[in-house]
Image (cartoon, rainbow, N blue to C red; front, side):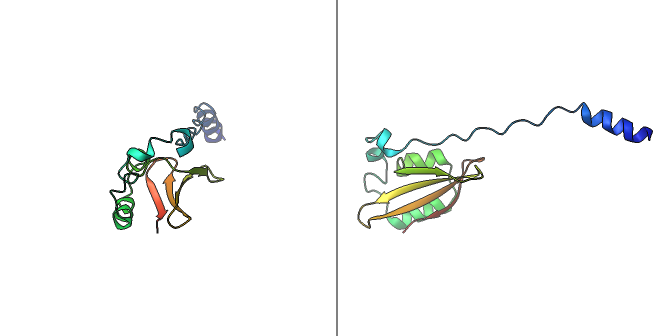
Length: 113
């Protein structure tokens, strides 16, 4: 009984868990239209294969934005764990997707055609 009371006392004095950090979403292309034209991808200096190899290395979100430019659309999944950056490719009339882990801000997956 004494151990039970001691355990309750110790656990009741523990600090509450920290609230989760808010997820910061990157800006989209329509908010800064000139930004994307100054990137390697925006200037047409990267092939599709080079983009695929670049994303395969799991770079940080900031490096993705510097290299590919701002996405056309950004979404956060229901669990607040993954950000989806959508890039519209006009030649194909299709979207390519970069998935970014919301906690580490590193690329966790992608679909680039």
